[in-house]
Length: 176
Image 1 (spheres, rainbow, N blue to C red):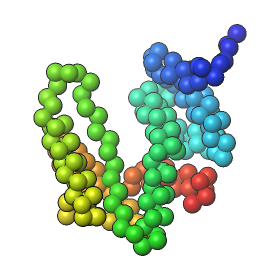
Image 2: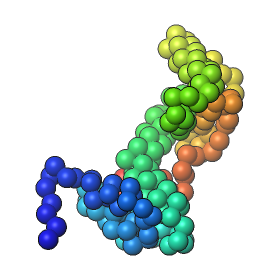
Image 3: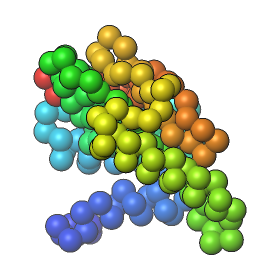
């Protein structure tokens, strides 16, 4: 018998991912459980959108899609919608996406991480002082031009998005 307690919230999904290779069935179960926390969502539509074209044996992609769905719903897409709304009111919006993952080993080269942190401190300080970032390459963000800056250890890149297809999928659920 499976006993569930509020104290174990999220442990079922974590156990599947940490115990080996998740299958599409495991991923669908996890996504359906997540969707119960998001009552406005159609769980079947979310599962189909993120896992519809994923091969069941591609365990890394299955895991990536489940994590991406959760991140898109909870963080990325609300940030996109907010940026669009603020820009629509005529405000300047500078959007960035930070997804750098430092090495988990303490012996990894760290100077590139230090350079990235220094660059971000410089950008934020300049923005706080002047209302404009120090990077000339940083484009304005809008609903028509979803251009944003991605900070990386080897420099910044201007990209389109982030995750526009997924955010457009979630748009009706958020009312945008």
